[in-house]
Length: 318
Length: 138
View 1: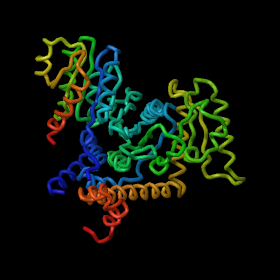
View 2: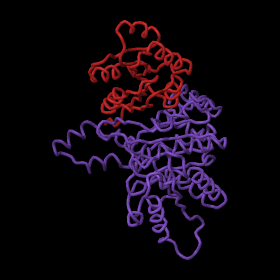
View 3: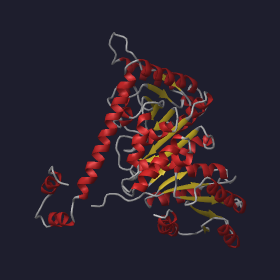
View 4: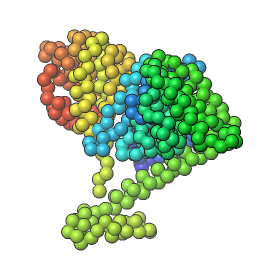
């Protein structure tokens, strides 16, 4: 990296800390795109890691995560808290394009200086978020946002990366998405710190809440759990249940801070961030070593993927 | 081995009061399929909301769709606000029911290009592919 770009990254980091929104937007792009400046930004922002309460909103497509996100923003703004939002939508594996549609549901907060929202594509990451989400979070933390909502793509049964990103995971589902048996399955249902039965206005919420509670209670022994994931019915459309959800999120944050669990989770987040950083860099560095000749030799069956990979991954090469 | 190229981000917005957004959605879809990250604001946006969304999303281009006839007021307002927020490199283009005789005045006020009804989608995609690297100076 050139010296000029290092000092401009330093200046950008300072402007983000000072609360400049345009600078925050630029810093987020550099971090998300893994631009050369992103390393300096990451290092400047990382000391703020753990300052904000990161709330993950996860759940199947169409469960109402974005609309609920809008409601939660209003709730936190009512308490005078600054809210940052990172909303992830799927990137097409075919074209690389993406339709990022989460802004549609949170329009009323667009001009509020206490709210900053960025839409992200998954860009090849499986698990419901994007590889560079950690850097984006650190930037929002450095810009003094105290609640950071990370909204995942509509998830399936085993997309649970959000549990290694957020401090508190709210798993959003709806009535009639399945019975107790669905709620007993491994994966997504294991990561919720609070379960939200959204669209309570549609009816069927009592059965859904009771199925969820019943499935969750099966995993519990006689001893009291330090945190027992609550199930709450809500309607993002009418606002019903949102204050209660807000209270639960807050008490989970208090629980994390007062027990060792908060630091334990932060350490898991740091490990995952490090692991993603290393794997991305190693992968790119390895691919950069593949030559045209390698590809040609494979095509002519004079070489094969194993031989090429072994040569590239041999230690001690530049 | 080349693994990645820059993904351009485009905000599609509907300023003003008309609620007919099928055209905007067709553009969103075409740009998505052409490999862009497309953010759609939804209908009935004020110029301030559009410019602020463009800032937060750090987009490379903003496309305005308008059928109500208020383009001479709203398009220049968006252009002015983008400038005011320091988003000088953002490519601003528009489309909808816009009479040919209004186009030169819009271009003078900061709208880079205007696409009328019936413009093939491939023309709009090609326009962005050609102009975006230049607008960002990269």
